[in-house]
Length: 119
Image (cartoon, rainbow, N blue to C red; front, top):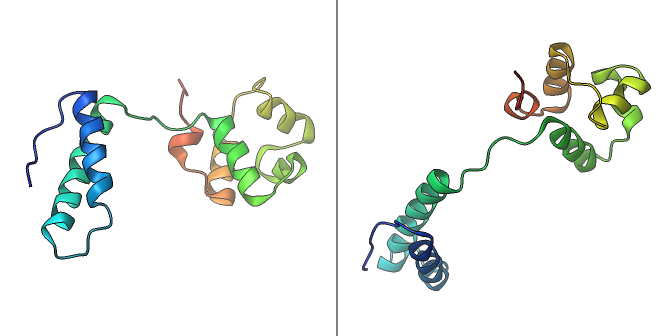
């Protein structure tokens, strides 16, 4: 096992290539240990250099709607009238704190996603 820090995207690609070759290693083997270390190094590098922030609130709502097979009409208990739902989904109206709370509690959408970009 010849592990070294990941300092560049080139190093990252090399780490991924090595990870592919040891990914299915049986537990308890040196290759499995190497796989765990590579995963930790890759995650650390990606979090530092290629971090992905929380989802846009409207994208988070639409994603949950798609997951659960919901229609805009189904959003009325969380957002309000059909006109208000349309305005929110078309980005013409921002979410109120009350809407955020209802969406979080009713559909388990993370607060971080619902509040991203809020001033």
